[in-house]
Amino acid sequence: MPENALTEPDPIDLPDWDAGPRDWPMAASSLRATVDDPTARRATRLADLQSQIRCLIQRARHQKLRVLLGVLNRIDQEIAREHAQGSADLSRLNRLIRYFDRLVQHLQKTHDDTPEAIALYTGSTDVPELLEDSLRRSGFGAHPINLENPDPALLEHTGLLIYLAQDDADHEREFSQLAELKKRMSACAQSLMVSQRDDFAIRAAAVRAGIDHVITYPIDSARLNTLLTGARAYECDEQITVLLVDDMATAGMYWRKQFARANVRLLFETRPQAAFDAALAEQPDVILLDLYMPEMDGVDLARIFREHPQLSDVPILFMSTEERDQHRLEAKLQGGDDFLNKSIAGDDLIRMVRYRAQRYRQARAERRTDSLTGLLNHRAITNLVDSELDRAIRQEQPLSVVMIDIDNFKSVNDTHGHPSGDRVIRRLSTLLNTRLRKYDGVGRYGGEEFMVVLPATEIEAAVELIDRLREQFADIAVTTEAGDTIHCQFSAGVAGYPEHITPQEIISAADGALYAAKQAGRNQVKARHYDD
Image (cartoon, rainbow, N blue to C red):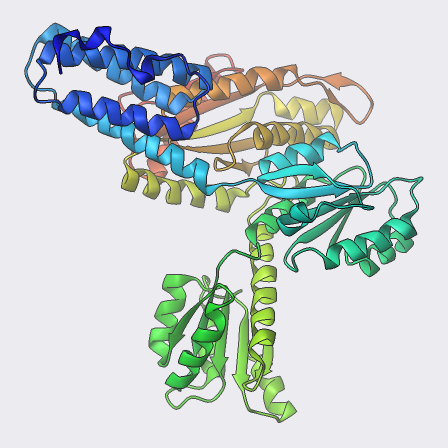
């Protein structure tokens, strides 16, 4: 690089503060080229890198990309250290820049892989704030639609239809229009009615219109979040996995062709042991079992599947030419969910496995949620720490875990009653649920304690983020059962990878940091590093 490189305009030096994720890879590429340039002198490379880094720091700060900002600051500090030491070895700086490059690739992948799903709403122009926040958290973008003249382009890509029923509306007419609208939408799209009425008549009308779920005021946030999670967990264009176990190889070849056109991934096994291993490794959405096989019949294999905790709830459908009702009944009683004739048409079997997969995924989503808040429950959030730590290690990214506890919560229950305490818990859960990224994990760890899992987030950035949420929560007014207004605070502890390397260490360290925050006076956030 020539000596006058710093005087030439560099594209990343321009104040394009709103450049999106696609522009960051170009910046990372420029950093790599600069540090690797063998033709430039060391001092020139460092000066050029510092100029670029200072500009990127301002951009990351403007875009509030705190993960990137943390790494850029570390690179800036390393450049200053290299200036002072004067060593020829830039290996540490090189590693930091490559680490930054991996984070940038992750940022772009996250942006590309999480397109916004469409939720159409009709019946009212006013979307309840809780519903709007929950839609945003679940990855839906809310769009109004006119029942009289709906936009065909929106209908084609809609994952959720919401009917906001009003007391003075002509429900019979609108339900008729909704029924027609649903016929024009994807068969996999879910529908939800939010109603101020809660009686048999309106529920019956909703069923006749083909509406899948009904929620009444006051909106139950736990059920709402569960329904939205289920709606996102299953989409028509999303691939499902089916395990077919049959001793006839021709069955596998036939059904593989049938399923391929419907985006169904088929796993085919002829031997029981191989089928069991495949089920554990691949976690299928549906298992299809031949009833009569030479090595082990389908009933015994179904019982083996049902006895394993990872497979106990997976839908099992027997396939056979068996026509005797008693034999079919016995097969169902031994663990099967349904019995299908092998002569079933391909389209019908595809519809059946998709329906079963949808119900299974929705039920799985419900089992992972806390009934009061709609957040992940204790088991689900702790499992998430394990899986996200694996991901962080593979991708060499940071991971932060936060333990949050509402301060003096016992006095809230004692003074204002447990229903008021539940309101406080729900308000904090709503704040966490709607102010964090879609791929962050938020769970109720137990009682008034919450856990937050922040992938690709360094501890310093996590502390800053949670501290802002702490301030916001302290400003929230909660109305008690008696009509009084109260304000609550929380304390939090943060720890993570790479400072701690096992799930147990991270959770324990975060809990220790939370204890330190409590001991220091509450209403604050503390971090626990490896050497603390």
